[in-house]
Length: 288
Image (tube, rainbow, N blue to C red; front, side):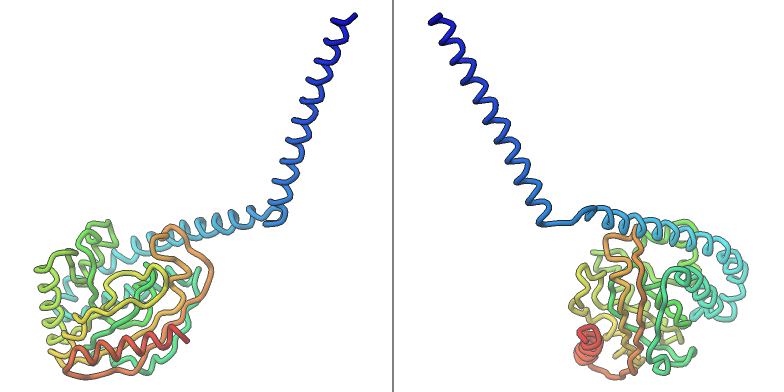
């Protein structure tokens, strides 16, 4: 009997310990659920994933459209190239009309572009130095829709891309080897030569795309070219491209609209003054 009594006591203690553990687990589960409930809402993760999925789908569609348009339009660009070289070797306006059509066909289904200050654009035949802030891969598309024939600088590796790179070669885009001082100097010399021969050049004075949308410091190369050639500097502010396709996330295309503001042209022979003035003009609009 005594042995049975101790056995019953041991069994009772074991059952009580199990019950306490069960209740403790239950309470922890309630606390965790309560904390999650307090910091979120039902299905909170679903809308986020849906937004990301939609942006990825839009991005895929964007690249399909731009590739199809490029393939179709590359043919007339290639066919007209010998004539362009004979009649308009430096400005290549006929090629840039096709580039404008390509850019417009690409962005039209996805992005609304609003323009301000188009009256400040120099005439098509006036060589100029265009300078713009740089937030996104979309910036070149947006600027091409302005309908001006300007050369711009691009990494040499981009010229190897099928169709797009070949079209850039036909347009006369200026190749650059990054981190190569000789290549940078050659680029500036080529820009000066092109402007003296009647062509325009586009620069992104920040040198690279902004990661956070803030305007970075300007390099003086563009303004040295302008001061040495006497060409007008035309500042352009782009608003919205960074939100639609942020730097580093080129596979996504968010919904939104873009605003392009063309500011009055400036002329001067002091690169530092031109640089500071252009940056202040662009920065003022971005801050506002």
